[in-house]
Amino acid sequence: MIRGLAIDMDGTIYKGMCPIPGAVDFVRKLNEIGIPFVFVTNNSSKKREYYYEKLVGMGFDVCVENVLTSGIATLEFLKKKRRGKTVYLLGTDSYLEELEEYGIKVGDKDPDIVLLSFDKTITYEKINNAYQFLMSGAEFIATHPDDLCPTENGYDVDVGPFIAMFNYLTQKEPIIIGKPNSILLDMAASVMNVRLNEIAVVGDRLYTDIKMALDNGVPSILVLTGETDKNDLKNSSISPTMTFDSVADIIDSVFSD
Image (cartoon, rainbow, N blue to C red):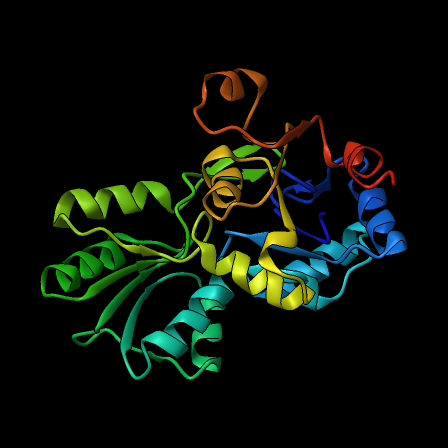
């Protein structure tokens, strides 16, 4: 029995600033039939409030608690598991503000941790500093592993290629907090007040959304509005529980009873 949905955002309910056709009605129907949901995104470049305001501006009936980002999950991890450690951030000014609001120490003098997030302000200086700190013994943590970030016009380069670069240069594997790691899904279950095994994951990516569901033994729903197409699905070893053209098709098929 599916009692809650962990739903991806980019490529699943919108692309850039454009809602996926039928997605607004999908969320409205979830509210009407009383199925709790949390939007779970690996995009860590903006604050949770940004995504909430973006969703509301597109016409989605949501509250800020419906949004859970890999950035927020990383902050919780640092606060609970790396208390008192100093972080060097590869990230946006917005994410830096969130780190400071959480009381996490940020600095560029012998940091304990190099934190890699979705950074549209990245520079050679930041990359070189991170390399030097990692080689000097700093721990490597990444908010998420996505290679590409969907936009209304296609895709932008995301965190994944930078993880590969630093791994090649330093031979260090990062702790990855976002999908497919279980941390986000555990937090989503807590927000929805349901058990983990009562959640289904909805998303457009096999190697993050669907893999997270498989790794945690919960149902997965792949939609073909984002990164994955039918050929990708056919050639992948990762198989979703269900596949739909878009989220617009989910309600009648999954919650018809």
